[in-house]
Image (tube, rainbow, N blue to C red; front, side):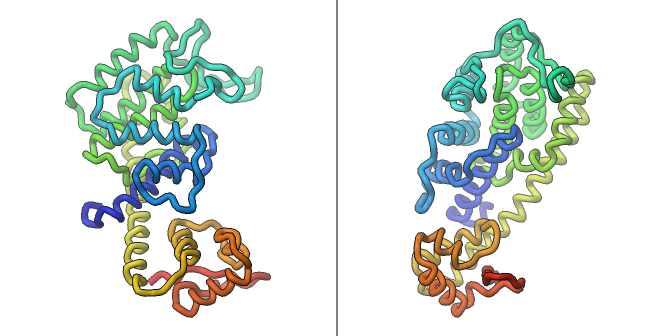
Length: 329
């Protein structure tokens, strides 16, 4: 990444951080608006947000949590910092329609359990330590987290992930905060406040095994070898995926370098960038018109101009409407 220049690094980091925020929530079944997340991340990174919507208050809070973790990775982790993150995840003090304790450790006599299944047929996957033990457990965790490293920093990230999720210190949001802490320690390990690979995306791709190995660890004592191996394999998958995406960012940068003297209007530039960034579905005149807020006649002229300039071509597959694809050299 160091060899690619500031602009390319920033774009890559924007893509990864956007995906990390989206996938971290998606692991828990929470779907955020991708354009809102991208807009918020871009704004905080000082990048262009033209054409992107203003993010909602909740998305802003979620993005700020992730950015605080990775951009200030070397700052101490305190209970107050964790409470601020937790408050950002639950700004109205509710998990769905259920009121929860926000910005404080969980409390109460009821056991904290991770369960699944219909009522009356629940399966208990894990039972966390009693609430009365959480302040002491978290003090031990924070002291270790902030201590001078004696463990390989990547292994420390793996251990922190397992340790925090097993304490389960909050009423809700523990999984998302666990993965945020993982990103924080991996940022320390990488020596960079920019993220170029997404652990949350890799975890989502292997979500069943993720929960299976966490459940196994919660029931089989202190030998965490199986978890460490799973974590390292998942990290390797995340990095392999990042290499593929980085290569696409490089191809995009080279594309614009080659086309720097080609006359293009703002609509064409916008759609070409959408195609490079992962346009879903097939491009046709109606989609072009909708994206650029113009008429189908103007959209067709824009597309035909790009076809003549060798930037777009007709897709091979047939159908009722003509589709177009980017010409990648």
